[in-house]
Length: 610
Image (cartoon, rainbow, N blue to C red):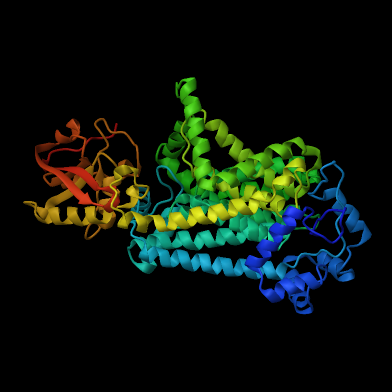
């Protein structure tokens, strides 16, 4: 797409002196002295060697028609294309008239391609190295999903099966370790960055793609997302790649069979990762309804893509059919009436806003929300790019904001809608999208990225700082949830060996975190159990697996939180229960991880499902 600048000063971008100074600072950071001199000598035409490299890049990313257009006149676009660009331009003047593209301002994509490649390699290597030096254990959810991988199936209690399948593959190749479990998070995170960059490059230019990725990486939430093996990292990866492929299908009138097929596969794989991916086809139809080419709705491929992606869900649907549709019941639980007061609703909404400010950094998040609001006032001036990115970001975030009035929202739940939002924000921040009077705040976009870099740097250093800290923060330590589990597993292994019948003693708890962590960290990775209650109820995957019905007469180590007593109906299934006291595990600044331990002697029975 042609680079869009102000028609008041042809050949100069950005339009304001403030932004010119900001660009000078940015060039000083990103460009060598030779590159800065080159830009100063001729801001219109790139160097000869760069033009050759651009031709190679364009051959990869542009269609034949687009390449012919560029070859016809590498400086000024054809007159009919200028008219089209004016009609579809994402930029408006503050007064409301469309800005004409400045001739000869084709973006130097190769430079930004190089920056992105360097950024991608550095971030990926940093994350891989971090896996081996960070003093953090697998959290309860990570261990829980790993335990799924030991019993491969077509579906699981709360999520589709993709995360279990990937965990099984990574640990089969690399062995059972925290690094092996988390390695896919780094790799899928890198793939997601590629998808995000390609979106920005294709829709606007490589500079926008780079800045969008930089803004995404410069958030504390992404720092965690790229390091923790959770379903969200898989979802965001497939979502970003599907966004790029979908845009390739809708950007022009040419047949795009390959891109439709790729979109279908990526949406299908995303749906096998997390249920949120099923929103993607719905947002696609919303875009097609409001797009310039509504005839797409009458064509077969949007419908074939949607139906084809649903076919990927046949395995978990079959599994749910055999398990009384338990995943649907679990999901519907989130939308049941809560009976909360108005004060409760305001509290949960405030928690949602606070969580998003922390996830994305205050400057970046507030700029994004302001951009959404102002663009709504300029609805009739939207380009197709703006419509596409707005629909795939703002609608989802608005939905979660409304949902937050009903119940608490985990900060990571809306994460999948931020890549499109940050692409739109980067396009605005780099002058490719106009938001009228809000354009005066563009200088805050790079400032928000810089703040995010600082906060992300702190987030990466935090585990080490907590290790060296003399403060006792207890559960207020932000790393508390991922500390002390390896020591707990080793401690339980030692206690098991001290029992009267170590070979006939199993581990059980009424909380799923203890069975999951003991299964991963105890020597030999024993099969562990969760108490389902009596009468039994399904609250996790553990209740769907067989209980210790083959271990009647065995003993058990019962783990509970330090402040809890052993559940009465759990104690009743043993002939005798011996209190082994409170156990403590030092975990640095977090103080101690405490839990209470009992030995249940001679298992008499196990609850039967009705």
